[in-house]
Amino acid sequence: MKRAAMALLAKQISPPNLSIMQDEGFTVGRVRTELLSGLTVALALVPEAVAFAFVAGVHPLVGLYAAFMVGLITAVFGGRPGMISGATGALAVVMVALVAQHGVEYLFATVVLMGILQIIAGVMHWGKFIRLVPHPVMLGFVNGLAIVIFLAQLTQFKVPGSGGEEWLGGMQLYMMLGLVGLTMLIIWGMPKITSVIPAPLAGIGVVAVLVIALNIDVPTVGDMASIKGGFPAFHNPFGSGEGLYGTALAPFTLETLWIILPYAVILAAIGLIESLLTLNLVGEITGKRGGASQECIAQGASNVVTGFFGGMGGCAMIGQSMINVKSGGRTRIAGITAALFLLLFVVAASPLIEQIPLAALVGVMFMVVIGTFAWNSLKIMTKVPMMDAFVIVLVTVVTVMTDLAIAVVVGVIVSALAYAWNNARRIHAYTRESESDKGAKVYEIEGPLFFGSTDGFIELFDVAGDPDHVIVDFARSRVVDQSALQAVESLAGKYEAEGKKVVLRHLSRDCHQLLAKAGHLMVDSDDDPEYEIAVDYSVKTGVLGGH
Image (spheres, rainbow, N blue to C red):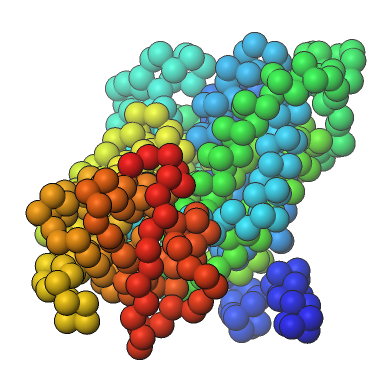
């Protein structure tokens, strides 16, 4: 017994798989694919990180540093090699109110607390609850995010420096659209010619060379903001005085805690939900499973570090993850490479990267949208149950209109209620005369007895018309929760009031334990129910105070 307990403990604390290649073979071709895929992802990360920094109301470097640090740490320690993390819009929209009211230092403090909460979730293995997300919710999740990614790219068609008020027009708009189309065409056609270079990287490279060589007047990365900066330096957001970017530090007090705690909880929940759903999606594509708790810890650790290095925090990015896996990235090398290239862009290569046309990056993201959207969900709408089709549409709409966390929670709740309703309608009973107890009436219950089916359960019985001895047979049923216990006691009370006896028969092991723990079963010993020998259990009333 002691040895088994030690073995179980060792299993719980066994070190995670942090190998660089894992199941992939270490070859020159594999390394080349990973490096090129990482470069492609890094190029796509730049405008996204800058844009999300603007959404949150912080300096572009706050988004870029977050993309680097979150991306690097999760690539090294995360539970799903091939998944890319960084600064995301889902988190940025929550941060904007905090930054506007209290300043960026409070944001850094919030990111640290957010990371701590995510580490706790990983240590407690709460990541496993992502299994409760039904498949229709997953379909709605990817469809909603595909639409969100598409809508986010439309801002690139606005005149830089106009505050998002003025759209491009005339020849500049036509050139932008043409270059986006050319990028998409290259990405579509490149795999038919060669797979040596990832198609998205080829699309970015060809269009960038074309724009620079012909001096085509279209918006570039540099038109959004300068990405030039140094290495991220340690910065403690707690204290007194002035912090980064001219804002006050966050005092290390309970008052600060009450300010940042609600934001930290929301950010931690959104970050973990998006990361774990992306983890499952990448797992389906790459054929790898597991790693939810490890991913939670890695996400948390990355956010704690990011908060102390002037970053806005982050989580998994479905768009960049799709770029990576579609480009052939399968190992930790791609994620590590993407993060290091991003830092290189900021520190040394900003003049070159700022010349890349936004049209090329928009074309890459449009192809991501096409590849991410679950087009088969449109075909199966008429073939799946109506409730599942409704959940797909609901989660998609809520994702677009609000945010991912709310959408997933709403989808899970609606799916759970639909499941409960369907099971509540399943309970019924067959009645017959008892063969072992002459004159007794047997109710053979079928279907689970839980909060949703208790009313239907009570209605199955004819208390006034039944004989003095009634047997309730649970061979094909289960007593699930406290509402079910209350229903059993209420039924026994009704028969008791009529001077009649009711007993329970064929309780399963879990039902027996539940009823015995509540004190409903009148037994002399903790016997072990087996179906070979039927045991009748009398019901003790008054335990829960209801009849």
